[in-house]
Length: 307
Image (tube, one colour):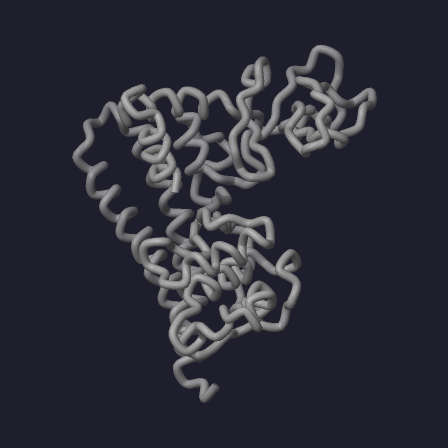
């Protein structure tokens, strides 16, 4: 998803920059951004990049929106408001997470989740707490609720999403090695209360509505589209969801395998970074396999289901 957005940016820039130049610039900015807004957009805040990532962090960076945030003796604030009524970012506050003695260095965790891959990708290092055979880890899976090139019902779904204040952009689902995975739950009607796995299933159900299920996009039912996706739509739709997740997992595992083979050809001077990458892939592969196993079992159960 990030690579596609880079290319979109370059198209908008025209002759202003090449893909390589823009990627280099973005890498520089991203490496100095340690907090993101509610949409996942990294924020570059003057002075905030001086904070180091700490093994025992004592502050947490939080984005302030107009009208939000509280002043107090344990809040350090960057930025200010502009007086408009539209909700927007007006600053970032550092909130203490434990006692800080006079003279202590302020440190934070750049990511809330134990995402070694993101640390390596954005900042070029992996914290000690995320290294070793017993270290926790994370993996991101991304799916869009519809696709303009593949989905005949794209514009209908796009409008339905806009009515909900959503877009057709890929949604990122983060899974941790500490998570417990079970089969998709079709009994929870509130999207916000769903687990990450169930939210991903929900989005894929919408993406794959087609054929005999397309009546759900008719004007009579369209207002209930989002609610209907909370539940199993049809046997074919559910089979498609399982196959889509399994295919994505297989692609990850294949990329990991190729990366490991490529690293075998690197010289010994890169042994440290190769070791970190290998540890990160090992944990991520374990999470991917667990997710794949859930949907492989769900596929088998759905195939034998009469409904």
